Amino acid sequence: MNDYDLKKSTSSLLSEKNSHNFDEFDSNETKLNDLRSSDRVIKNSFDHNESNHESLELNESTNTWNLAQTTSKSHRNESNLRKRSKNFRFYLKKFRYYLKPDNLKDFRFKIILIILFLTILSISIFIRYLHYDLLIRRAINDQFVIYEKSKKLVFLNENGEDLLQAYYGRNIPDDIKSVNCRTAEMNNKLCFDWMYRARLTVQFKRELLIDFDGNNKTITCYNFKWLTYQKYSKIKDCFDLSDAHWFGLGDIHNLRLPLNRLNVEEMPFVTNHNESIELSGSIISRTLISSKGLMINVPLNVPLFLSINSKMDPGKICLLSQKKFPYLTENLNDYYAHLDYTVCLAKNINVLHNYFYGNQQKTQYLKKYLQSSSSASSLSSLSSSSAVAAAAVQNENIFLERIIWSTNPNVLPNFTQQNVQSYADQITNYGFGGIILLDSRWENTIGEMKMNETLFNNPKALINILHNKGFKIMLTVSPNQAFDASTIAECDDYILKDSHLQTPLLIKCTIDEQRMCLLIDFRKMKNRQRFRKNLKQKLLDSSGLSIDGIYFDNLLSSQLPRQVNTTMRSI
Image (cartoon, rainbow, N blue to C red; front, side):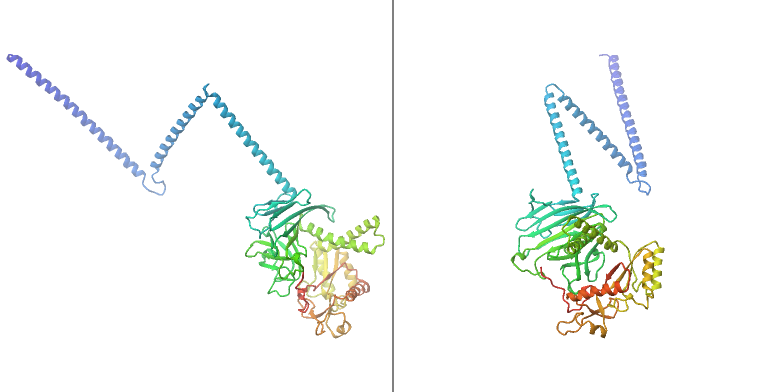
């Protein structure tokens, strides 16, 4: 190799080396530019994060981390959309798979099964709807709904609205189930039997009552009869006091109306004189009346105990039957308690009152008329007697349907003929009418049954004037006798005396007066006849007063002397 070739090869190697260095330089420069670009990206991202960080500061007007929440929510939405799309594609593929000829039979079979299932389900729902609709219609017609598991009974009005909730068999454990004992031969609406415990039967009766205005009123009554299978066991039914005002029970010590305001623990419902022992007084009534047109009546042969808002049954009035003191047992059959009561429903209280008491009055008048009539056996006399009885009941019910305006000392302190007439004028000026009840001051002395001529100079004219104004007139009469020496001498056998001392028993003439009166001994037949004779001759015939009614006052046995015992009674 000559020098020229050596030089040429050397220059060639140098050029290759330089070229390689230049390429390496370009590569390094490119990498440097990339690093600078990446640094700028990182810097811009950092600046962007700083700007975002500034926008995510806590303040009162914006939410914290709102941007992060928005970003995460958008990611979730996208994820949900992807899942839905994936599921849709899956079901679409599955549907296409079933549409293949090989799988079409299996698909049709499944479709038929689904249609059959839906058809059976629809029929079941429809039948259940018809069943409940039938139960509702029957409940509205019978006006009560019974829940056997909870031993609850709901009485309904004519529109299907709740009137009263009753809870029967409160003393029977809930784990003891009842058996339906109703048969086709039994004339009972319901019959439940708790084996070796008790039996309940319910009879249903509906009557149509024509009131005095000629309107038809419907009365629905249910008779509940309990009978125990165990000696000395008790039966307890309770009624809800809410959503209605309750009245009744008669003479109760410290009575507060309505009865919802009373708190009475379980007590025997018998007459009583000592209010520190029992709350019941000396004239009691086993009738409860609800302001919603509902009445509960318990007969006298039931050994009744009563509780109102007791600690065991708050908000309820409970009827309990048990053979224990003070109810006496006369033979072995009397050891088994029984509870019998009637629940009657009507549109309002007036309809119930006319039905319950009007029928009793009509029956009494009918019996009296038939006994006094010699031709009572004929049909014509029977129809005429019914008309007479109905007319008599209608006349008496006037005093229940009209307003009674009393002239007691709180209303008319100065009781004179002129003031009574002015009192009647004031009532008519307000557009009212009704009945004016003259208090006991109309008599000279109590028991004399003569008009006080000092206060009334012309009593006949006063009564005629009041009648012309449309009022009925009633007089207050006390079945007592004024206490003075002449009266005692005349009424030796007429007045009530102590059985040992043979001294007259005294009572207050009126509740708010301090005057003392003698008690008439109504236990003797001749004294009762004498009182009626004096009432007719002295008050009605001799005076010539055309009064419309008599109001007997001071008849509460709780005001009688202690020697007269009306506390105990045997059943």
